[in-house]
Length: 414
Image 1 (cartoon, rainbow, N blue to C red):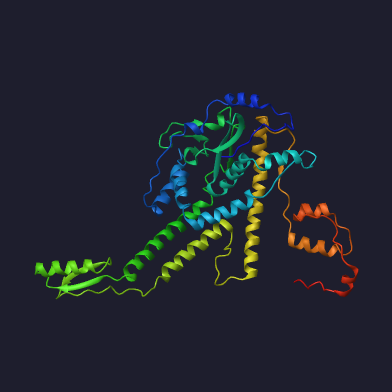
Image 2: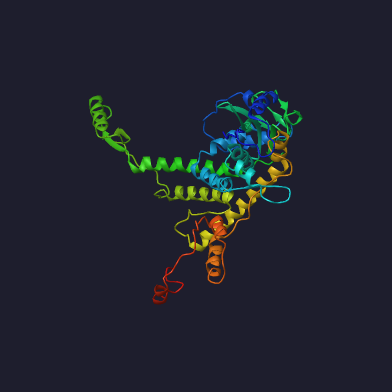
């Protein structure tokens, strides 16, 4: 949970801490606190479960979204999918932003004030999750922390939200609901992001790949169990109970591998199938991982080490960067249309401000240009320190004699 304390010196005429503490009682009912917690079933998921969940979410009358959202929670336990989603989201969530005034100039005080506030992180996370899970509905609230009012933002569980018709179900297995878009808190305390139509987000296409992976992994594990430690067979006279009991004791004492006893007139053989050492399952898992990477990151980055190359990796990273730039644009748009009006209605932000990300720069190319220009031009040390994080304390002094005797070329340190 992010926190936002208002005990600082007010840069834009904000209310005092006592006033904000009193304001916490004006909101009225909390939607999240009224959500009925549910135990999620951990039964095996399959393609039939997925198609049923799709049908329930896309039905014209009274759609239900808890099956598909529960399925999304389930597949996000897959570590590869989890890493791809986090890799894309964290590239955006870690990017510094600026708050600009109406004249386009950066409001340094307000930017520094909001830069490290947890509720900003939670809002941006909710915005980005709409790419993968279609929709986010959340509410602001003031909470007292150490007797200081703190602004927080929480997402209402997506299982309890119908974004098509604008309903909240406090118990998603019940038909009782409220229309949250008709509530007085909507647009200020209560805000939403994402699609309101019948799209289901990127995770919908990831569901079958994760299910196939689980199937292939379980089969591969079974192959290891059967062929890694072959079962033991003992032939004996099964009509003689003494011999059978002695055979059982012998097999149990020999270890934990599977075993069985057959009559000396019987025989045992493995059915003849495709000879494999597990490559068929390995290839299935690799295919599913590649498809998951393509769906989330737009490319396969850093995974195909056998056929990888420096040029291929740079191209893949460039594709991912394009997706991240698109995500940043989405965050800016949602702040402009939804978040800033809500925070202004709550008295948190002043009028006429904008949430912006600076354009990305190729620092490697820029540094090369600076070092080349420094041979002919004076470079502002403050700009160098701000742009590259290099603390400049002055011009380096060089002994003239040493400078004459050591005539080093440009590529000496390369």
